[in-house]
Figure 1 (cartoon, rainbow, N blue to C red):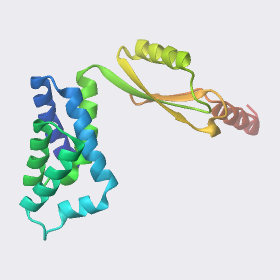
Figure 2: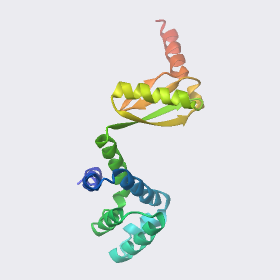
Figure 3: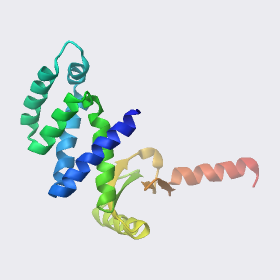
Figure 4: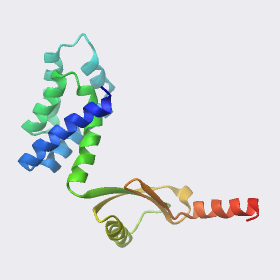
Length: 181
């Protein structure tokens, strides 16, 4: 079975628990903190995969780490289940899929805006409202700075890209001049 399919099954199970208990947002935050530990520590990833470590040893290490990042019993039990089932290496994929499922469940969509300079707060709010109106969903805006954009912005939302950058406009003009159109 493909890793993405397995990750989705676990994420869906956790989503159901979160919906039932009303803890979707907090479970997402906790899962994110644990996933970040795996992303930052190659030693932890190796320990969780290496055959010379028993399941109990892995669970002991993971239990101590979860005490440090402070997670709920639900998240803790979920992580220990992943260790028991040999699926702990999927925690980063599970976290990504879980976040997507929570957003979908709550009627949200994430948008990434890349601009040459930071957006002012009024511009940011105006853009959020415009995107919310266009998508009919609550928009969570992530901004990035890329000076190669020159001016304007590139917005990616719900799988669509809206490129209003000067860089792209100049490229299009250059292409038309080269072809004589």
